[in-house]
Amino acid sequence: MSVDQVVGRFAPSPTGPLHFGSLIAAVGSYCLARRKGGKWLLRMEDLDPPRVVPGAADEILSALESLGLFWDGEVVWQSQRTEAYIEAVERLRKKGLVFDCVCSRKEILLSAPHPGEDGPIYPGTCRTGLRPGRKPRALRIEVSKEQICFCDGVFGHLQQVLSEAVGDFVLRRADGLFAYQLAVVVDDEAEGVNQVVRGADLLSSTPRQIFLHACLGNPVPEYVHLPLVMGSNGKKISKRHGIVRLDYENNAARLIAQALNFLGQAIPGCLQGAPPAEILSWAIQNFDQNRIPVAPEGIILKDFPI
Ligand code: GLU
Image (cartoon, rainbow, N blue to C red; front, side, top):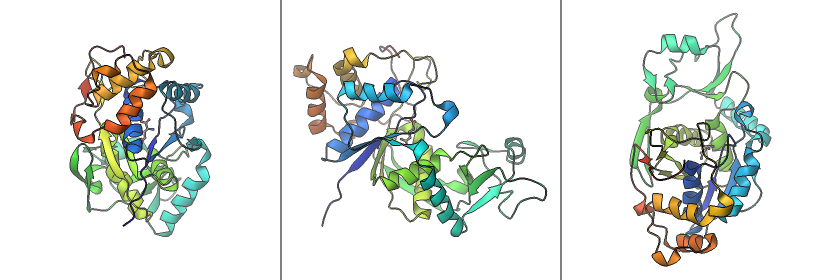
């Protein structure tokens, strides 16, 4: 039996410099792909122009280089992938799975009293056709009532019924931009990604992505979600909120060691003061997925300048 080569990836959004939370995703996805001699790809998720911060993509790329996290092949830019997203939507349309929706946010809120995983649960208003005189806004996919089950590499068995948790979700937004859920699935498939390692904030998006893979007839990748880094205020740290720029050029080894430590990997004392490449080479050989802490609430980082 031939075993497929692991193809992992890191897919940052260039909304700011690489913060400690994204560093965890970078180091975790790198080690889990390389550990099995796999490829590690890099995709810049610059799908949403208003959120893209000029210079952030370059800053992320040079931070990864300073850390010695070298990716395979060319960087893929989502802003250049529009054709592929259009084609995927057409395939879904031919299968009768997508529909135009005229509802405004306010209308959905009014008709959907229960909050879902990601805002109000769409009540299916436009499934059966557009109301006369109204212009289509977003494009949605009709979800099923089936339970979507998967086994996450850290968080174990999880399931979700999309019709109850999110409802028919958006593939193309009212502003014409393709939604993250669609883009990530189309790109992971096109790049042959079979291992998705990322922050646990995306756990609740995973059933939507598994559903889309199934609708498009794609194989479903393996998923590994990493615990989130929380600030001392108990909130997830993010690029958009008060970050301290990390000095990747001068502190690469220390930052990699801290990321590995956060992921439960006990680095031997003899690697104290070793260059980044040496720490990474130890990590590739010794990274143990079973040691990643299962922390649904995230882990508060007290002694770190985040
Ligand atoms: N672009 C997303 C982020 O920076 C990650 C998407 C993914 O890994 O699927 O949070």
